[in-house]
Image (cartoon, rainbow, N blue to C red; front, side):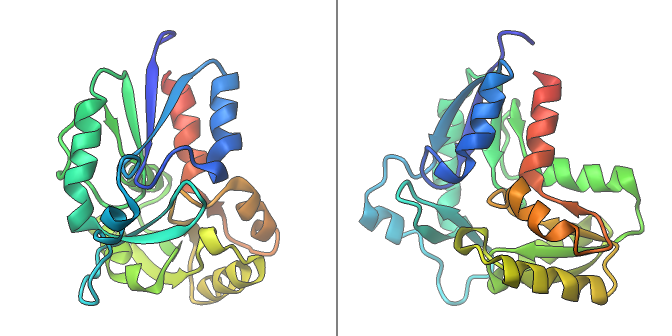
Length: 223
């Protein structure tokens, strides 16, 4: 699809400085990529109003344009996501840069969901793997684990934020998950990068997958 137009949508603000190199590689590969952020037009007070309550467990984590990490209520954010996707329907593909579970919640025909892509990719590898999951925040354990359990995987979860990256902490969490019996480690957020994976993979005896790397590879294959 030589003339494909691809919208890359962060649930935070665009452009995403932490993804700049990867997105530039897509452009160098001939893809017509445009970046958008769900929060682009919102004021600081409007973004603050999207913060989760203490009772909420379905929490999303992303970056603002100033590289500040923010925590968002998925329920409060959904109308803004839906409006953003509706505005971009003329694009060939819309890639939502979030590994949260949006299956059956967003009905856009040309939408690519990393969650759906990743769970099906791992199913294609093996159906009986014990999966170690690392996400940005401890409070995301319930929703992240449920997403993979619905795909019929045995999972173990830990947290180490890519937006406050600490290589020693990430390695320690990964080694503990391997010790707990994980056959495969997934850094389950689009914020994790290939360099982050490379910093730890040689000190583990299990494979490591970062969704951004896998999803961008698929995107290049279909465009």
